[in-house]
Image (cartoon, rainbow, N blue to C red; front, top):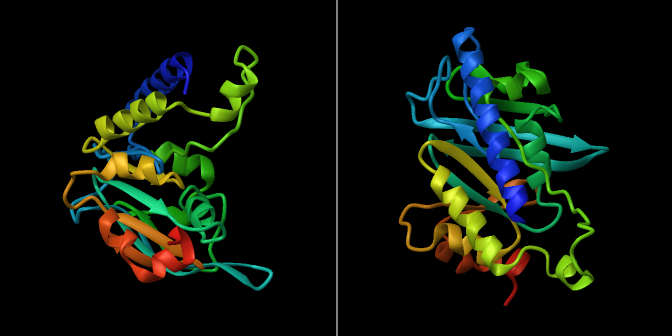
Length: 224
């Protein structure tokens, strides 16, 4: 991530927070992201601790179950890492949370009272759930080598620091394959959960050490 993109991201985040504050003042629900969502509320009720709750979510495409009775709960202010092999259901899960895909069955709530399955995509965004897509980009001022290395180790570390700085005041769900990045987000932090998806369900959940030591996770995703 280049410095100009970091600045642009910060400006975009500030603008989104200002819009959310205006929405709250107008009587609409506040909040922020499925990559991040604000804990401060307006109409958002987090009295029970969970800011995002998925219950028995099933999504089928031509008979293939992309999500198979997926149940997941994210606490207010939590930074949760989601990992899993390709086809595990990570993208479909994000699609359900943000309203892009409607499940065949199940429930999805933002806080205790906002039923995400009753809202359109734009209404979910206005309620405070946002998403950052992975978007490969060619930067003309970079060399071919710099473009192929992707983010540098320093840029990756700074991104992890940015996410960690948002923890507590925002709830974040990070979907990632880079285990070094996951380690940077979870190292030395007791209680930080990593969720492993496989075949549309939660295969394992716990600390990074817990899931790395899980034989099923090793078999289907991490390898030996």
